[in-house]
Image 1 (tube, rainbow, N blue to C red):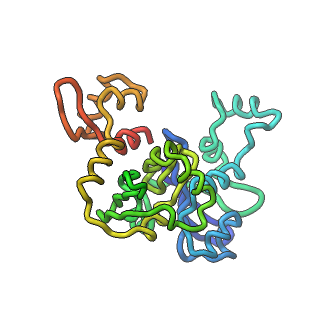
Image 2: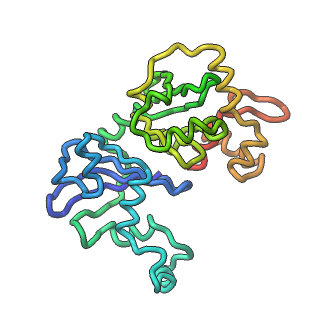
Length: 265
């Protein structure tokens, strides 16, 4: 993951950070809570009015797209060749221009770590999640809280009804990049903040645990397929400590699905 500070040259201050998950090319914008609708980026005004400072990945991506040369520009091939780029890459173009745009005075600069306010918010991000047999969502948060969420109680989430009506999509739910959201079929997201606010703290039951094991563990073969690598590469990741087996066997190990997916980020 790369981290970039977003600053406003006219105001002479930072307005937030841009997180970029390189392997999956996902963007997340974290805004500072001192912003208001007049000092924050125009695209995020509706979120700031609601005091929502973690911007969803689709809107974060839209903000990036607005600040770089579009991929359908007539002379895009020449532009990429001029910058020695083999393929169109939004983040590389952002870095080259420092994210500057004629519509405002914002720019980005790479930083080495996360600001404290972002680290504090991330404590309520997801560590793991799964859909239980009773169709409720069991959420394991980074602050060690475990909550059950009944998705039907989550209001104002356009498209949720389609997820609930399709069992295959519903049970495809997994944790998204950085634990910022739970995604279904990688096409519908529920922000971690909504799950945290809408959930009920629970003790984990045996049936929940069985559902978790059934839907959120990979053997070595499946892990190799998910990461598009050999079994030897899986062993290398284990030795480096990037993934940890939850059960070791001679013929193969068992891993948490969330850890394998995280290794792709």
